[in-house]
Image (cartoon, rainbow, N blue to C red; front, side):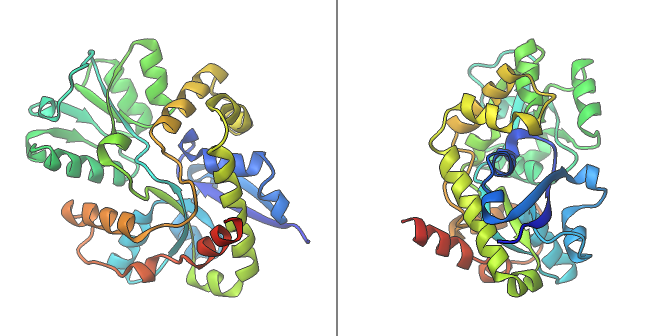
Length: 307
């Protein structure tokens, strides 16, 4: 089998995307003849959707939200074929301990939210409404990039901070913040991140698609049967800046809430839930057929093959 080089982007440099990192470091992609390089989108210098449309990438990791947005604005299609993260990967942190946190606690308060992507914010709006809180009564600030938002929170601005890992775990370990609630738990199961490609590549390279999806599923099965320490050790070289003990706590928290998909099938129920979140939040205006934005053929084929 001839080795094929591929660059696959992570939307952000975070162990939330451990399934991609593990697939590379454990040799699961290599075992399928795929020489995969992992790179954060910021380092690549171009967003995943544009890179796919421009032909710079063949497959990328991203949020289904990107395809909803593209279909809504430009009537162009990017197809998602394998679910990766089945939970929101963000955490709501408070300045002081709130062991009895309730969503009305946010009324009249300032939340420094994640500025770089809209899905965490859209999920927050849905969770607030579900818990009887008018989002208009909460000051949600999304103007500061991650580093500036964290610095502002440390300096005393805002009452709550919404961030992903390892930032959340680091602040908790330092005592600089306290976990109010996991947004993964609060939002519930949702296809937060998945692998995507163009319809043209999907048609043109069926063998590569099959091999890639098979490697994805192999990694998913490995993650489901190994400990937080083993997973942390497996992905350490992709995140050398994260101390081993901190990485293990990050992974353990994600494992406990069943963050990572057990198989690659992106199911209609999750798709419908995310679409409703984006419609309710005003991020998109139209519904889009599941069969247009999701291809399940390769996921079903590898699941069937493994029983």
